[in-house]
Length: 121
Image (cartoon, one colour):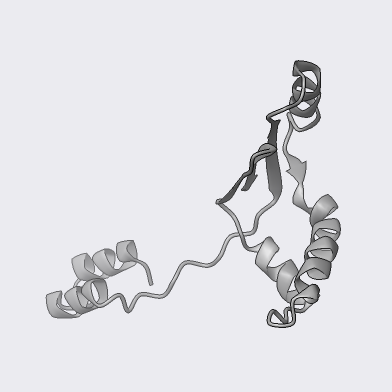
């Protein structure tokens, strides 16, 4: 039940003012269903490269990429990197689910060589 449903129930007289206050104030509402990410938008800005290379990267990543096409490549590379560290034990299925339900996530990577912006939507 979200806030709008609580307020509608209150307006219809199905719940009392005290019950509505308890639901809204104590955050006992159910979280919204997670939304699936469908596309990835990349922006890569290499600092020390020429204008031609920057223009090529902008053209290459001008359109959003479907997440379904690149999900398995990303998961395999990420799993390889994470499996090197013994403290982090994540299975591939967990990584796939994390990527699948990461809608409206923005990642910014800034280094001395390049700046990368990744947006999942």
